[in-house]
Length: 74
Image (tube, rainbow, N blue to C red; front, side, top):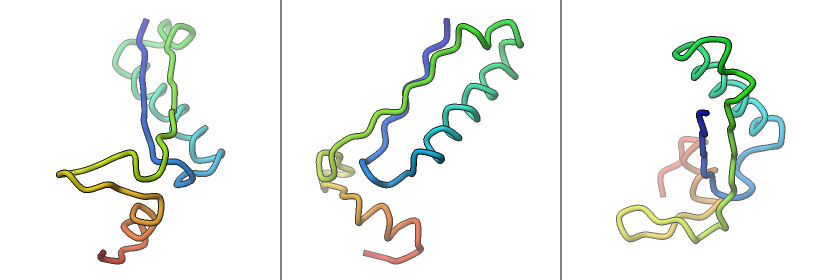
C-alpha cells in the first residue's frame, strides 16, 4: 500500500488546492503502479505551523512562502 505524505506550511494552500494535491499525487502513483493500486493508495497533506519549518537554519513562515509564490524576494 503506497502512503504519500505531504507537509506544507499552514494557510498557504486552500482546501481546494490540498484536494488537488491528493488527487494529482494519487494519479501519479497509479500511473506507475497501475489502476488496481488506487483503492489502497493513501495520501495525507499535513500542515506545519508557520515558523516551525526551517531551511538552512532559517525559520520559514506562511508570509515567506506566499511572497515566494508571488515572486517577491525576501
